[in-house]
Length: 274
View (cartoon, helix red, strand yellow):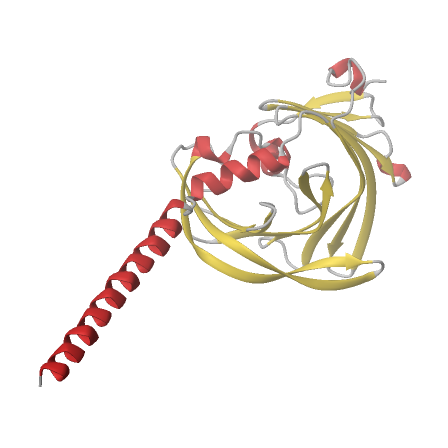
């Protein structure tokens, strides 16, 4: 009888110790996950840190699809951080020499056919840039999202995004954070944005852009992610303006250089006339 009682006590003690250990382990796992949790604002900060360079030079090809028409344009561009950029179209011949200069919230366009500099402002900002799905307003954006939007991490999702493998289009899966942004100021291009950010390299993979009414205005996807030093950058962008019928624009970055020395006088109106 005593032997049975002793066995029961030992069994109860083992069960108690098991429960304590299990609870302790669960608490440690929960604490670890909590300590390593990330907020939407932290994700966006990492995106900004990853994708904003002190200086850069790009060579790019823009392919515009409108119905059955396909138009290809080529350009070179320089940028310093978020505030300064200069772009010059080199192809086709009718667009050769068209130049753009952006300094903070100001943008100018040079038209070689009339040898004239035009400041792009007001209602012109919402117009199509060179016939593409991008607006001048899209190109002008320079403020960090944290300054204009309330940011919330709403979940995780694995999505497939197109990329180019030689001359063939393929799809690559990305495990992403899903971030929802709502404007907290009036002066914004889009009232709401939804962004899918790759968890590994903190590159935005997909972005949906909405009006205040809730209507989706544009859909952007990014792929062909390349590593430059310790950072990552997408070299393929596909944008659809959902207000235009049968329209999309694809941007291919054919050459990218980061951390370069930019020629003096690049970001000036005088350079537009050269």
